[in-house]
Image (tube, rainbow, N blue to C red):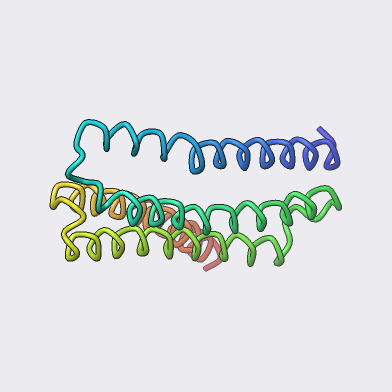
Length: 154
């Protein structure tokens, strides 16, 4: 597959992902929240804060899509493996970590304001740990690769 074709496919996937994200954030989440509110009207005071909080968690996701668009452009320009792409991927990992931290901190704030349940905080903690474990696994793999290269050069 040529670089331009691959870049086009990646951009198409990014557009579809962005549209799906809009559907989730602007339609599905509010619908689920509204259905939950119909079953448990006592959560009405928490409805708007939770809705705003969940929509805010999408901002880093869309920032990452913008960065991925730049990477797709570099791929189309036959610069797949360049330092700029490495830096852009690093920015995406920082966004992912920041989003996970924001998600957990937001859950704690909502709990302190009595708009959350401790079980939801525990689930969010598990989500953050899974994300951290995935990142740590990647970093350990890279370190192992570097160690292996170093062992072969000696």
